[in-house]
Structures are given as C-alpha cells and as structure tokens.
Length: 394
Ligand SMILES: *Cc1c(COP(=O)(O)O)cnc(C)c1O
Image 1: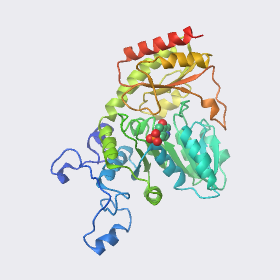
Image 2: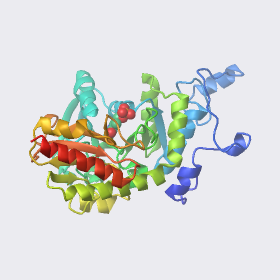
Image 3: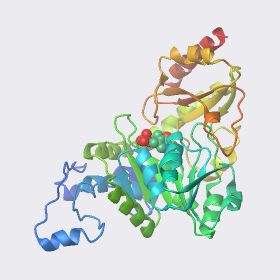
Image 4: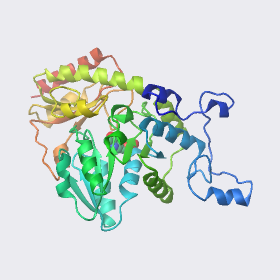
C-alpha cells in the first residue's frame, strides 16, 4: 500500500489481493495447521526466517494471519505486526520479548489491570524488576532510568482514569538512552493516535475492541516500527506458541473495513453523552480527554486525531448501594467487561485499589462507560433514569 494513501483508503484496501484470489474482493480464510513442502529444499528454505509469503506451519503464520497483520501495518506505517489470540497475549509479547532476568521495566501506573497482574506475577517471577511510574511523568521519566532499564510501557489515555501521557517526551527520553518504548494504543486505535510518528517502538492493540468492533471475537496484535524490533517480537511470539485462529483473524480484518466510520460515530455519541453528564449534579467529573475541561485535553489536541467511545465519570459521594441501584437497572448500558463493540456498556471502577506509584483522588465512586452506536437520546434517557435511581437510593 502506497505511503501517501489516507487512513480511510488504507482501511478499505489494505491486506487484500483480489487478483491473486480469483477476483474475489475479500481474501479467503485458510483453515490449516499444516503447510506442505514440495521438496526438501523448500522445507529448509521455509525455516530460514519469517519471510513474507513463505509458510512452514499454521502456528508460525498463514496467508490469513498475514492479511490482518499487513492491514494493521499499512495503517500504522510501521515495519511489521504479529497477530496473537487476545489483547492480553499482545501485552505479554510486548512486555516479555525484550526483557531478561535482571532487567528493569517501567510501566505506567494507569495501565490496564491485567497488564499489571502479568508484570507483577510472571515477569517478576522470572527476575524482571517492575516499577510503576506516574502517567504524567513526561520527560521527567528520565529520573527513573537506570543502567538496566530495558523498556518503558505506556498506555494513553490510561485505563479507567484516562490521563493523557506526553508520549513524544517519554519516547524521546527513552530513545536517547537506548531504551525501548511500547504503547498500548487500544483506546485511540491507529486512526486516533500515530504511535510510530510520535516516537514509539512497539504498539499493542487489544483488537478485540474497536478492530473486531462487534464483540464477537478475541484478538491481539503487536506492531514494530523497525525490522530488528519486529523480528524480536515475531521470534518471541512463535517460540512461545502465540497465534490466532483463522476465523477470528478474518473477523478482525473485516472489522477494520468499517472502523473509521464506527469510530467517528462512537466519538460523536460519546461527546454528546459526556457533555450531558458534565451538567448533571450527581456527577463530580467526566474523565474524557476530548472534553475541553479535561486535564489531558491540551495534550490530546496536540497529539491525537480522534477520541473513542470509552470514558469514565467520577460521581459525587455515593454509597455502593446507590451505585448498584443505578447500574442494576440500566436497560441499554449493560454491565460487562470489554468494550469497542457496537453496543454500550457500563461498569463500576475502583482505580484507587490498583495504584502503587501514585494515589487516585476522587470525590466519589467511579463508573466507566462505553458509548455504543445506539441513538444518543435513548442512551441519555437510560442514564437519566439511572441517576434518578442513584438519588432515590440515598
Ligand atoms: C481489553 C484490553 C486489553 C486486553 O485485551 P483482551 O483482548 O481482552 O485480552 C489490553 N489493553 C487494554 C487497554 C484493554 O482495554
């Protein structure tokens, strides 16, 4: 795909080759474990590296995994990607591919909970020193660098709390010391934040969210800006047995085709609902970088090209009974983990329980919302009834 093409065009065309597939618009789905070699020479050649279009075994790569990887790579403008079975598997690959016992890894204190759990249990068990840092550290992160610092892990905006990180400043500080950076870019997707353009080495996406976009498959993908970094990711993923199933890869690739229009609508709906919530007396704060009142808004405007449909609110002081009264009765905002599908979701959050480098100060309980593609007026009516129940339960 030519570099000059715009993202919407890339989404429509990347990763498919109709002329090689009998003229069919979409690539076929290869269900396979085994790739057959015609000769011993071909067998030996297929083990030589991870050459594009050369296949040795289903786990190592197929035309179906390459089709999705190529599409994401074209969108991100990096060297290459590796698709794996879930977003958390992608986190695992990014955190583990470069680290060895005795290394020091810095992770933002705002990171996705299961990312922390992986780092605190598995990485720590293998002798990697994990340290959390203030998501707002910016260039000041340099003070935390040590001789054995190998990786800085970012997530912007942060899970549950939505702090926007100064990614270019952190990436530049790390680069000047030869330290790699990896960014969980699930919230913005490559359409909303150009990770490689802002100096990041490795991207992590829970493709389960907006790439798949329909809450019907799990998928993860890591991307690398440069070839040596991609080779490390690919080698680690293959060595560890990471791979994704063909139908799920196809669903993720299909989701990409409409991700641009979906994301625009998620943002439009989310902004309308965030503004409405801002004016409600039960709501102390709305944590959504696309709002001018958000503390991360200036950085978001500087670095991002879109917002998604996920944000949180901090309620005025309220009891758990009151929050349950609100959430238990929701009709459209259903309670469930994950997000990024067409449907709205809602969850109580407890960011103060997982922080270690910073403390999360909040007036009252936290609630995270994923604003789906429903009509915002219906969503607002659902929230209004919920806030009425919250007040009535006081
Ligand atoms: C959901 C999520 C993940 C993990 O993705 P799964 O596909 O659920 O394993 C990782 N990072 C972020 C920010 C997420 O929201």
